[in-house]
Length: 410
Length: 56
Image (cartoon, rainbow over all chains, first blue to last red; front, top):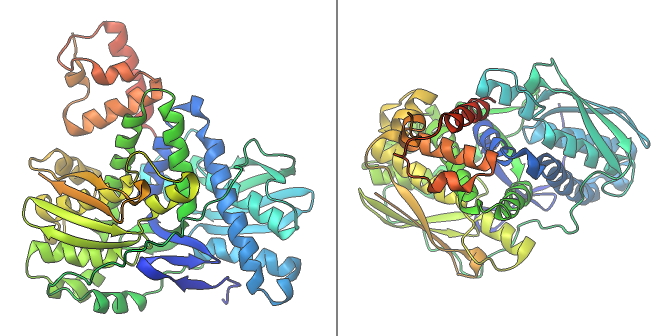
């Protein structure tokens, strides 16, 4: 089936834009743990933030994407763009056919935040998890029917995460409970170009060529199963807006550092499942493993792959058995902070920091080259083992430094 | 009598304790001596919160 989509363009420093919106790959485990963390304190009302962050990014993306439709696409073209983009990026399937200018019902027969979250916990959730879908549906309906952003409210009436066979979201006219005043798309580009890839047997350009041959579009169900996880090609601004708002609200409770620590833990889950899945995949065996002579080469190989995820460009500056220094050029967390708030007073790249430490733990502590089963028991054993790497953010582009430097050591 | 170390052993326990501190808005939990005996009602509250955060 041919989908109606907006242009996808590669930018400097490993960034990828879809209708001008920076995209980043993340898996269902990261998305689950991040949302679980943000929803821990119910008095923060982060469910409204998550929904609004989705609506904000999606409305901006669709508005820009409409420029690629012939004659603006008409209502049918706009609807196709919204529905097909949802599937293409791995969010599932979205049916807007029963929504009019005054509202209606959105059906999501398949949802990453529904069925794929249910797969992570293997039990029904007590509350709907498809907050992103609700925000997407709100923005899509406003876009299709040429209404301003924030025209619709959403109510999740059925959610696969709670055991429903399919998702159902009711839209009605009216101001939603939260609309952000501004918009940031985290596409800032650093002035300092990344240096060449490390002098190693690992061929970054060759790895990128091989990965470019893989299909990273959602399948007929709108899902993106790869490397043993369910991927999404998600909106960087969604992650930034929601996680930074979480930190801001936690700051008022005296628990901001605890919240940052939990965001790092969320990143460990990401590294364990996504990096672990990549390093135990047939694609790794075919392309990257033959280039690796040492454990350090495994890190270089993993960094070469990271540089295709839209997270910015990573460069390993030093590595041995006990430490690694990585420079990040245009990491999406720092870029997002700069766009949203200007200069930060502390580093903000919690996902990236966890990614660096998590990668080293998989390679140097958990012997990922032996292809362990990446389940919770293994995670627990690995996380409790001696000699784990821990990351420190030494410099930060969010604070105005030229690069974000992350040091992981043990 | 139980301590925080009994209820939240190891690194993963420390992360779960942090989750509970956030959920209950109790920053003082993270400053409590982990070897100190806890009152029974505190233990019950923490175990209840632990059950909640371990659910999906």
